[in-house]
Image 1: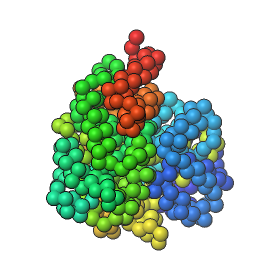
Image 2 (image 1 turned 90 degrees about the horizontal axis):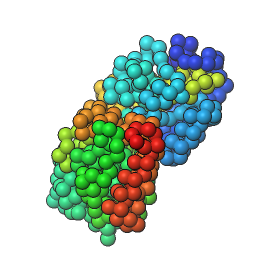
Image 3 (image 1 turned 60 degrees about the horizontal axis):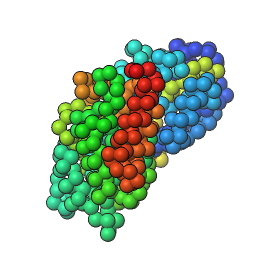
Amino acid sequence: MSFKNALCAASAIALLGGAAATADSLTIAIVNNGHMINMQKVAEAYTAETGVELNWVSLEEGVLREQVTSDTATGGGQYDIINIGMQEAPIWGAAGWIEPLSFSADYDVDDILPAMRNGLSHEGTLYAAPFYGESSMVMYRKDLADAAGVTIADNDTWDNIKAAAAAIHDPDNGVYGACLRGKPGWGDNMAFITTVVNSFGGAWFDADMKPVLDSAEWNAAINFYVDLLGNYGPPGSEGNSFNEILALYNEGKCGMWIDATIAASFLEVDGVAYAQSPNAGNPVGANWLWAWAMAIPAGSPNAEAAGAFIEWATSKDYVKAVGNHPDFGWGSVPTGQRASTYAIPEFQAAAGFAAAELAAIESAAPEATDLKPYVGVQFAAIPEFPEVGSAVAQEMAAALSGAKSVEDALAASQAAADAIMREAGYYE
């Protein structure tokens, strides 16, 4: 679909407001991850053809969440388009904070991977369109693993992962066995930590939505995490999240990284191999599921123009535009959102991670279970989770840095989570 056709198709987009699709400018809040940064360059062609100026507000992940949540909840009107994810989209859609999306037939909404479409919808209505999607997996230096005489398998045990990290660890030569998230934030350190807890058989809440962070499973998982990263991770890990670790990896300082599959698009070192996420025995929850998506705050005066841009930026044509762009290429296209991307020969040739990424996405299990009685893998799909997760994140960072014992950090986490859930009325 051409840019002009996308603008014409905006008249069919079921959005409130009714403003003209030919708005002079749009203000877009984005997370400062690589694919979003690339979009600013690719979208210069959109402005050239449509005349719509795009004003980008690029923010670190935690700051973005705070600012976008505050502005959207209060109807501040600062942004025409916002980056949000699976935790927010269904909840904000149900609350009327963001507009429902409906695109032209050319958009082919059925091409969006079911996991992404379902995670960004409420009662069958799409409220955010995925710019890229991800699960999590192991990205490791096979050359270093081979030299150390260790192997890393799909869904490996955590004990084997620790043994491999120990064997690869060579801090005297600037190589750390495992680089993992430690920076506090519900979407930073807690994204990774929650998958570890899940794999150890733990959960955030019981069937009555009471926090269970004082459980044996949490204790075992956090002790393991602190031991692994404390002994075989880089110094100052409590300050590292996605972007910091990506930089370390590309400097050749990480033997192993367990994180978002999308990171594979930006790895610049040789010898990288991929494996499905480790598991301590629980068949559910070893790898997360997420999408960075685009949504329109309710009542935006530029809703139709915003919808037209989102249709273009999350389309098959956008993927091709990145693949054919002289500054990027097929190894840099946004992935995890559309099935058709994985069938493109040029992408298959350029992206050695594609099969592992798709397998991780398709195996993620966000549905509620007896063990995990809420939707979400590395988060719980309830409005209170960002507050709960942020409080616990600070305690986990304190445990990692040695400022608190694991036991004290978990006790404080349990108390904070319990207070939040009681105040929210889940129980007395």
